[in-house]
Every structure is written in C-alpha cells, then in structure tokens.
Image (cartoon, rainbow, N blue to C red):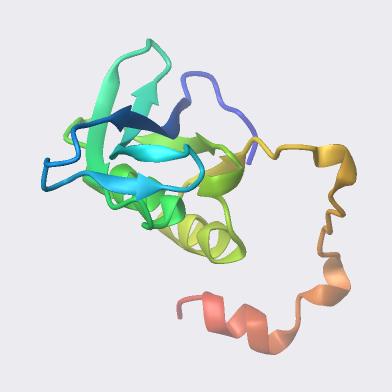
Length: 134
C-alpha cells in the first residue's frame, strides 16, 4: 500500500510490569524472566496511547494487535500497524489485509530471514475467487 498524505499508522508493542507474587493477575513470563503482568499498547504518531489491554503472558501478540486495531475508541482510520517480531504472522498478514489495513512488522535480524513475494503466477483462479466478492 502506498503511503498517502495524511495516512494514519500506529505502533503496538507489549510491556512487562513486575508485580507482587500474590496479585491474581501476576504470571511468570519466560521471555522477561520474572513474574508480572503484560500490557499491550497501541500508540499513534503523536505518542498518544489509543488502546491498552492486559494480556495473559502466553497470549498471542498477533491477536492483541488485531483486536486493538478493531476496538480502539477513536474516530481515527488507521491504515497500518507497526509491530515487532512477536506481533506478526502469516495469519496476521491475511486477516489485516481483509480488515483493510497493513501489518507492518519490524523484523528482528531481517538479514537472516528469507522473504518471499508472490508474483502474478501465484494468483490462481481459486485463490482470487475465494477473496473477491461478487
């Protein structure tokens, strides 16, 4: 998708907050190596949080990114969502395309990842007819 003048894009990521062991929301998180809670944020260009949600430490960040874009309580029409490596997946790319915005991952160590771009031959009649409305 080409960037249009005035196009709105948001960034989203999770933050781990340490919490007391006796808090009912506290869980062990292996990536952060400690107990606490995970909060997933959606931030617009002006550094204002438009949505935050408490996540289970084993929850999918892809699902949280999509849910935040669907349920933010603003009138903003976002056309893209920047996420980190944990916020992107093949399913996420497909769902966000159908919802009308781009999933824009910041892929860690992109120089070691093999990326593919489908060409015209990849657009089969079956796949095209499945995604178009009549």
